[in-house]
Image (cartoon, rainbow, N blue to C red; front, side, top):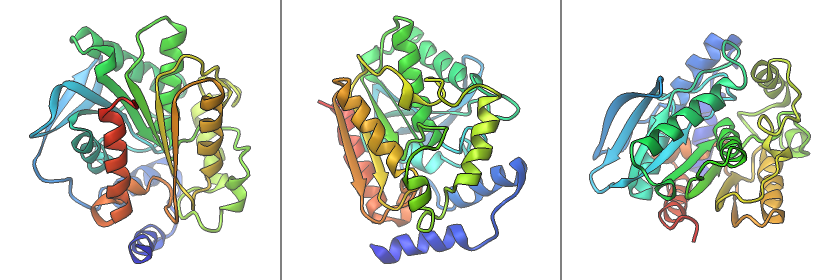
Amino acid sequence: MMAEIDDVRSLLSGRPRPVGWTERRARIEEVAAVDPPPEGVTFTPATIAGVPAEWSVASDADPRRVLLFLHGGGYCSGSIVSHRNLASRSGQAAGMRCLALQYRLAPEHPFPAALEDARGVYEALLDQGFAPGDIVVGGDSAGGGLTLALMVALRDAGRPLPGCAWLISPWIDLAMTGATIDCKDAVDPLIHRAYLEDLSEAYRGGRPAEDPLISPLHADLVGLPPVLVQVGSAEALLDDAVRIAGRLGAADVPVRLEVWPAMIHAWMLWAARLADGRRALAAAGDFLRRRGI
């Protein structure tokens, strides 16, 4: 197990850190899409509510249910391509269709563009006849924060909520006040304070980091559906996951927190070569199938 995660670390640290948005976007596609997606999955491009998207459907997927997947990348990078492996494996593990979004990215499109795109697609799924309880929403890193912000926005608007939600290594505090931002810096090969500060500034577009739809750590979480939070112990964002699980629990939201030993940020991206990635996806798939029950 340690040899596998060390191989992933080598993949991530083998080249100098990219500089600038163009290089960062290219790098995430290079390292996150290094493995092919699983066999037996059909991919179909789509445009829904004006947002580019991609359906991935395994042969045994329940057509009545859908995982709306929101990729990570700090709101400034990440794509359908970079997260195709993770999104398709997630839908496969959950036994449902997966819809991965290419929401608009900052700094060209700061907040609330990503949230507007996610909400527009969710509403479109309802219009297509999907029952709210048959939709689950999930994502990694910034996609985890966006998942939570989407549910808060839907609840505040009196709209039907999804059956459950899934947060992978979520970034839910864009002020970066968690202690592990610094104390895990030496062991996290991906996430560092200066990098997060750049992403936060670009996404916020001058808005305060404490805005609850930007940093859901500060949101009223009452009334949300069940949530699964999965995080690695070797992550700078470990405190984000632990704190949001505590906030959800305090708001009487059914929540399950899993801390995976020695795993790094969004480790499930490399599930093709990482046994703990596959095990974490299997656990998430079970949660999503049961809607957290």
